[in-house]
Image (cartoon, rainbow, N blue to C red):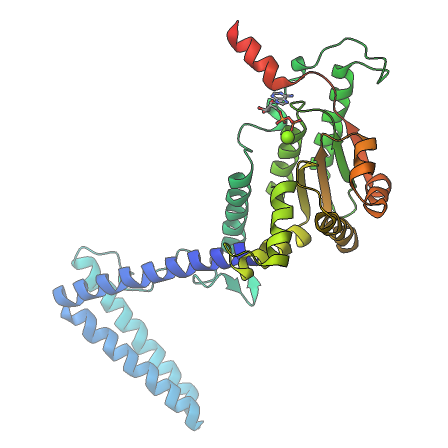
Length: 335
Ligand SMILES: Nc1ncnc2c1ncn2[C@@H]1O[C@H](COP(=O)(O)OP(=O)(O)O)[C@@H](O)[C@H]1O
Ligand SMILES: [Mg+2]
Ligand SMILES: [Zn+2]
């Protein structure tokens, strides 16, 4: 699993904060217990002294170190036993003054033997999902909520099929694509008019693929191009480092959803930025889903031949058909 730097930094902060809270809590507990049962403090001081003795013995490599260690160990156990009794008598759990960990596996470090702990992975997953849901309404837009009744069954000679049959097919392709997402998956190009469910199905895929642990980034073409422009022309606002990390996410994520291609202002700069994004992702192996209202003809007119040839050669096109679902919803609402 590849970790996004920005999300990982946030996850590490969360873990560090937990650790801090646990240290503060422990300090409070110990202060209280030591005030109420001074013998506990004395026992702990004695144990600390004994442990220091072991360290010295180990350093001196004295001949009878083994026996000495065994003796100290027995003494410590007796002292700990005594401490437990005192704590219990005082109404506390017997480990009340021991270190506290949210995750005993990694002792709140996030790593076990240099590898990410399960707690870090779970937190990362949650943060990645939160990040995605800030960009995209994935709560209501999922395969389960996809309603085929919005698409009519009237045969359309232009497509040699009905919108319902086409969209049923598109739905199945998207659902299988999400379920089987892997490095060898294809890239998808969703084509069709406004309000036909392109963003809806892209969001549905994003949700499933993100839940499987892949890094998924969603953004509109307008916002992606704006990031490239900010990087190039440094127009203030977001800091250069933030822009750089945003662009790295567009390039490095396992699945990028580039929504509404064609709504951005097209200049020779955005044309070449789009080419380097599309081509860069083909080279890095990340998968991309592009949605657009533009027809094949319009795509050719607006973008460079290199870009169009990548879109035609490396993307599977799915044509969306039907009537604007926003309008249908409004009508149904009025009835
Ligand atoms: N198959 C569907 N079932 C239920 N709601 C849908 C469906 N397709 C689209 N919608 C809803 O209709 C509206 C327009 O869909 P959207 O995906 O944004 O269209 P597009 O991206 O093609 O312009 C949104 O509110 C969306 O949630
Ligand atoms: Mg859309
Ligand atoms: Zn852990």
